[in-house]
Length: 232
Image (cartoon, rainbow, N blue to C red):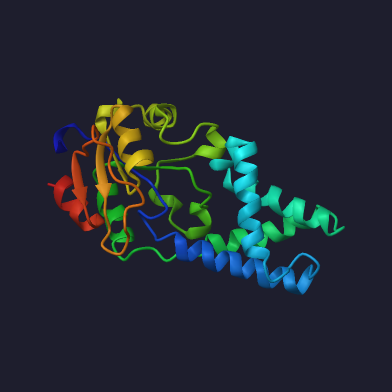
């Protein structure tokens, strides 16, 4: 596989950092801000109610399933309007949440691997999430970064994988996609014609099992494993 690969493309959440603790902390930071600035919104059940709003809005508008910044903003607008507060306050609240959401703890292997792989391969990312690589401080490692909300189509649809390959001017078979999600990452990239690396970090339980007809080209437990398999 090494000789055919020109690019390594990454999922972000739960591949380069663990996302659940980040979101939990960001929601708490937002809640504390709301208690200080808009206490009428910040009931004790705010976080639980917020998640219920999210589920409802996703059911009503499927785009919100991958347009996560827009989803949270819409939930805040609803909450503020119900409390008689100007909906423009949602912009300030989202700045608070976004800063906390991008305060991620990279896995220890991320920076060394990106630097090492970047000497031999073009590096990119494809994400359904709302991470800001500039804010996180690793954008310079990536030749291209596609976000589903901006692209308009999410993983596992082939279109977003093909767009990344087109941006790098390569064929899908010349890229390996690395991700933790069995459907969005492994199955999606495989259907798009890419090589696949299923990331199964020891501290994370895969959220989904692999579909029976999906087999990744390689399974890795760290980016160090990936380097060993891809680097000469």
